[in-house]
Image: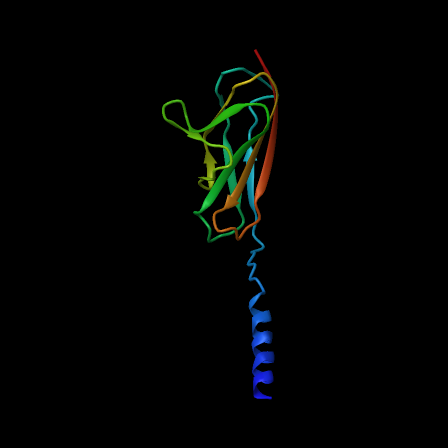
Length: 138
């Protein structure tokens, strides 16, 4: 009888352990981008200023930017003409709060859609996504 009681207690405790603790804060981050235009020229770098805002008063660090191309080909780099660092697709890179400078260089003609996702490294806030559409011409 004791064994049956202990097995039932053990089964109950194991069921309690399977619950996940999904901690989400009600804070949001917001990514704003200034598009360089609807029509861009091939192989010409364009300034792409991004601004990251948050309503969380204690979170100044730990924000990331994820970049990928939905359609078309292009390169995103962080920085200005003097110094820049390339950004790989689907690889999170650190992004500061406020305005930061980025550059986009189209590498193929046709339609191009760039997707930018701003998120917090630990995932407590909800991410923000921006889709930029361009027509790339010669």
